[in-house]
Image (tube, rainbow, N blue to C red; front, side, top):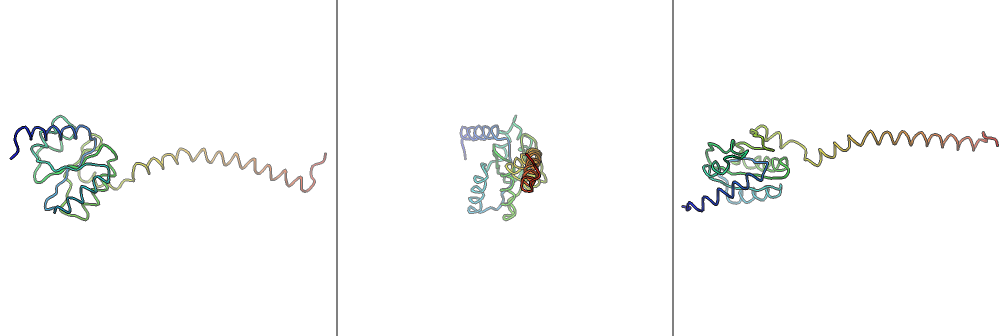
Length: 175
């Protein structure tokens, strides 16, 4: 049994993590074997996140006054947290892929950019393209009109050069 001072340290550490991270996924992990848990932690680290198994009462106390307070209230069963300060889509994709291969791993709720989301929204988030791909598409959309304008201007000059060259070849110009 942990001492009260150790529990206080755990609560403070979890509170700091919850305050720093803007994206949190609350999950259940019943009947996961050690090897599966090891793989899950590896998947979460690969997506740029952190994974933590928590006691429900400690999570509730640590989350008081944070955006995660709503989702960490009145938890039941075995609970774990996956959180990140980076891209929530990458973490959601990684967790969803892991949940497909391990049915004992389930979602309970989440917080993305300070907003509470449900299980359906987590799956929708996992189906989104990554942030870099969205930025690339946006830049293409912004850049496309300028490229078309440059091509049209260049085409006029090229056509004029072809006509002049053809006129010179056929001796249409007289000096």
